[in-house]
Amino acid sequence: MARSRLRVYYGPETSAAPSAENKGERKVQIPLAEIFPLLADAVRNERTWLKDFEHEEISISTDLYEVILAYQYCRRPSA
Image (cartoon, rainbow, N blue to C red; front, side):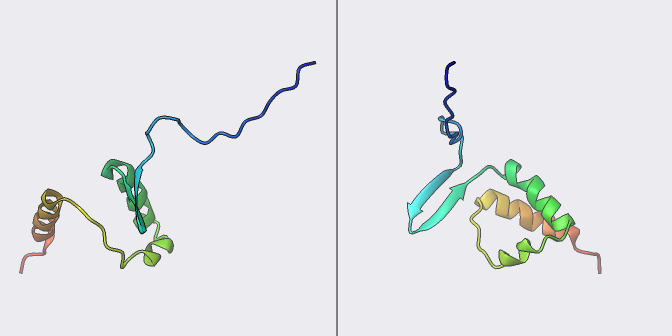
């Protein structure tokens, strides 16, 4: 009777995982499309772990920042 060999799975061998930089502080680059649904769900369900990160700074492109500012301006209630 042959013995079965078990192996530990470490994930895909291709570079499909988010890239990390090693400059003292760990950073991950991930498409917004992957994080939006998760953050929206966490906000909707008032997850307490969001408070742990509410003062974190994030980096976004200038284009996205301008779109967010325009959206914020459009959402203001009329005086």
